[in-house]
Length: 428
Image (cartoon, rainbow, N blue to C red; front, top):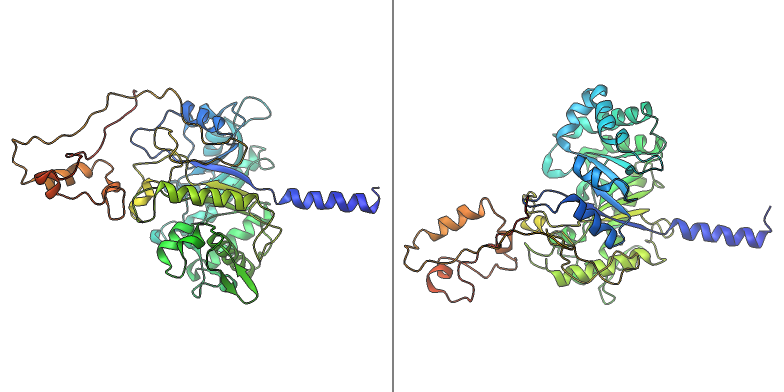
């Protein structure tokens, strides 16, 4: 038995240790020219990233991660939820093919920590098309993991979108889940609590800033001089804490005040909208990492911060849906080919980001104006080209939004002549 002073000291160490945030990254593959998985794993290791969250279970990705010692969250796409909800056999087959086959039992396999059922299936823009299937799919995956003797090592979670919880007044204490989700959230949280799993959620200071005129850019970027928000006797100095405590209030209102929270997505885009730039993203990311590594929690959870945080995202993805905004294709800390967009590190000691090395490219090609051709239909041709390419940088607020046609095509007043896109692709 330890003497009381020693016991107290060890208790304090444990409390401090419990607030240490693990920082990982989301790795999405919705790209026309994806970086080969072995290159991405090299990129993760070069930047000392120890945790990665996937949106599916691509065999090539899992093979590349095998033996890397990187801790993995496997994703199940929304398109599979209906089948997994209705068929336990389908769930068992999925677990066998994607978890059991690759799982590391201390050997050279993949260190799978979570299975994420769905990709933000409660996102408001989806309506209720996935609602009826989420809990059943999660339960069947859980049962399949139990049957495979992996339930003690792999946890089942459901990533929830930033708009699953709201506060009409903007005050965290008034936070609650959307009324159409109340019953589902109680079922989900009961399931998670029963199996000692965490609540996965997106927190998006960028979208909050876009949608809420009362949230300033400085407040979103963790700036010291930002105007504070007050909620009774609680003071909020940044948008992250405001959103986090809004979620904590929502969880408390339905009876789950202590459940662990994992921030499944958080980031800042670098193009496709106003204030989506590399310099602003750098400021945000540095502020976020410093905040997560500080010893201060939030007013409602001063000692119980998110147990893990996954940066969104590792790489740009030019095939992501732009339904919610053109910025959706520009969340990457790195460009699609693994080149850092700004100075930053993931908090594990590396001074700055390390680029992907020895990337192979096809010869670059450029579109150039032919002055002898009829340019009267150039706008239609450009729109046709953009229908199959990523032209989101040309959208309002984007980095090339000041370029317009037909003036651009006819007058050549800009130094770049008909440069719509640099066509770079990987060999193979």
